[in-house]
Length: 420
Ligand SMILES: Nc1ncnc2c1ncn2[C@@H]1O[C@H](COP(=O)(O)OP(=O)(O)OP(=O)(O)O)[C@@H](O)[C@H]1O
Ligand SMILES: O=C(O)[C@@H](O)C(=O)CO
Image 1: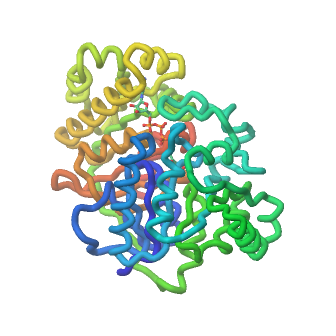
Image 2: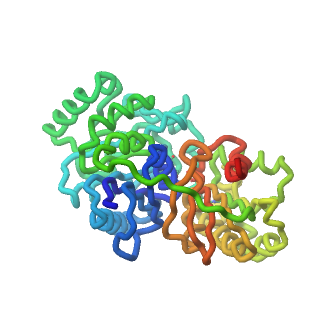
């Protein structure tokens, strides 16, 4: 089937988040891990390509996102979505703005919008400032993120240094006046050469209004929630699509957590409290002794008890590891170890993988050689169970964004696959 919306996500959990919200419509959504090496085949009306470019050097991010765009265009897509984190995670140099600008150039479109709001998960934008729950972004736990600490809440100040064009704002007062007011504001801003327009949204109703006003634009950018209304707005073009029926998977499970978000810390603590088998990974000890002790522990576990391996730690421990090893090396050691755990677990029969963290999910799915996933039912807003093949077996994967899910997420994910 011809693809009508092609999306590019800057990390793997961000991609599953977007795919899950698009799939709420009932439309078939296909998720590709990395740019497919083969031409489009058996495509879905909604195609999402997951990249791992949130923190890579900008030139690598640009190359990959342009390749992804070319693949989506050859699948038939004429409208495109650039998905980044609802907390606008990026380094000082990018990559949100540079990728948006590159995609705009490829699509010959002079203007796009930026709307990372995700009200269901407590992300709101007001007067261009991003809030996490009731806190400005820079006062939220995101200020301590291991790779992209967010120390400013103004999306205008965050975006302007990342782009060559001018940044502007459509604020909540305009959004409240409806789609025509948004379209007029975009036209006025375009007249003033404002290429990058941040749009306020504090509730799902705002996102529906914004999507109604902008779904004709060749390129939209934002978090996942702005995309949720798009299938409905495009339904007239695609008609009904076959619902996806998830395959059965064996119950052997492994949980792998490399996220150090405040929420994942609470989720790991809650899982430890259940008495499930758990193994803590320490980057300093991994640097000295390598991954073998963890792999040996994992090999001894009964995977029906869903063991957890976690590097999840509080900000002080993360900072201590980064001081000794450097930020990149500390992250890489953990990602490599959790990736090795995934392949070891598969070798021991694991067919369900619950993974916390975007970078971590990228490392795990790459190690498992998974290139395509079908998107199933959500466990929590923005976290669906996804289904794929690896090593000749059907497997289920839950790739959880660091901040998403309730405190009981890990057990919620386990029970979500039990027969009703
Ligand atoms: N104890 C630790 N010390 C230092 N770095 C760590 C530690 N544990 C994990 N890391 C690294 O921190 C990074 C966490 O990023 P990841 O994207 O996986 O999680 P997240 O940012 O919380 O999730 P998301 O991107 O979905 O919000 C990874 O590179 C991981 O390897
Ligand atoms: O938008 C979000 O918050 C998530 O989908 C994400 O990108 C986490 O990596």
